[in-house]
Length: 383
Image 1 (cartoon, one colour):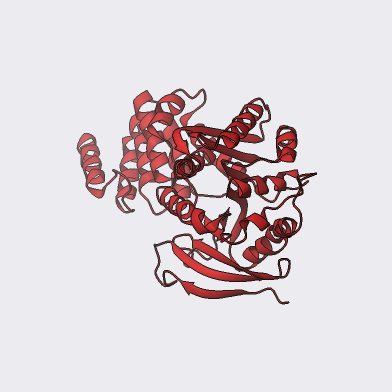
Image 2 (cartoon, helix red, strand yellow):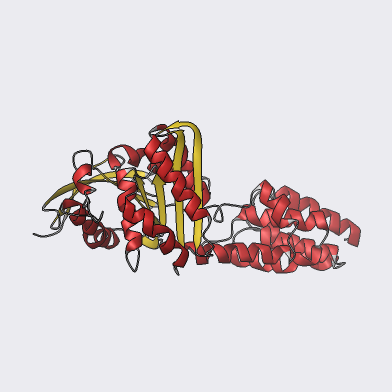
């Protein structure tokens, strides 16, 4: 049977750019000998950014989890608190019990549970890789039974996911007994999130809290572990609170420099402000395998630190980096102008301000501001 994806309909026409696009598709599976319904949300401007690849967020229980996950991914990526990502949901309303079936003696996937487990890695992911521009950073999301299922991928030698968002996972004994040891020895970076609630089902809450306590004891720099026990949250209401929290935790390094980061990290850095900025984006590249331009907002935050501490010599390297990252913007020339101005080179500063005037405005830097700087320096120089 030939593996194919049939397009049923598109919620938003592909010609509309700047909006998330949701497609409904059907995958005919050889492994399952049946068809499976998928929901796929494309990142904003996916059609126009033809060379860009995106992280994948795979959502089990797509019938009810896809929309809250996709909505939060779109929202957080819009504000650059996470990278744009492709979100794929698998509808399981009629099949989840069979999809998550395991042997009652060894607790390993069995029958359709085993087939579904293999379907994800052997059919679905290769097909998504073939048809969409997916990067190597991949997250999976599940709720109770499906959350337990996705943990079996961590029992494999080479897990196919990097991030695991467990929403009140219904852990089997084999996961309880083996997961802490596996994560403690992992040589690959793993992001692992657990959520439960004070009003969650008693057995699930107890199981999740035990897992949280076990994983908190792990000392492995490759493991990024996060957890929440939401007050007065039930088995179902915790989902709405956990999804955005998990995204914030997993992508905490990715987001722009916050006011808290500025006060507690940037101003207190032991190195230069320039190195703090460069190191931040090197970490983003290494952690998430994403190569992104340094944000204009982060350049301006570092500029604020330089001005506050009066370490104007740092503007030289920062200006050159800004010119490389954003050659069309005036920020690089402005930083070099400030460097020359404060280090007693007014003629050179004047030239840089004039160059900045010819480029695009950015943040609070405007052409009117550059004219004021130019006129002020000309007056000082008697020109």
